Length: 136
Image (cartoon, rainbow, N blue to C red; front, side):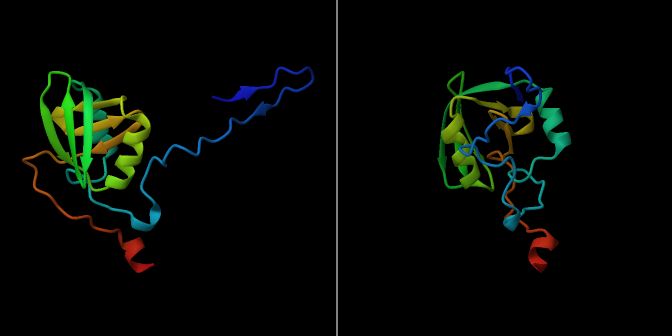
């Protein structure tokens, strides 16, 4: 939200200070994964389908390597995988109690951040780097 000055004669917008504690919404461009397979990048269509499906609140979450264990509101534990555990860890540390899953679409939302996860039954693929990154 943009703040406006309340001082007389000052009508221009004052930009809010950036919040350096939040990670960027996407991966660093130096290691861009271009897979949309389970556990990798989330496609806008996948995210749109997920947001319109049943959401389940996560009570607890634990991250061990690429595996995130999610304890949902009914006490069940799910083990999902994500290709970017460093980014996921930073966001979970900041927004631990704002974690929701969309089980039908294996999507994880932590605050405003979305993650495409691989379930226990999804085949796992290692990241594939985009041609632009490989040729640089």
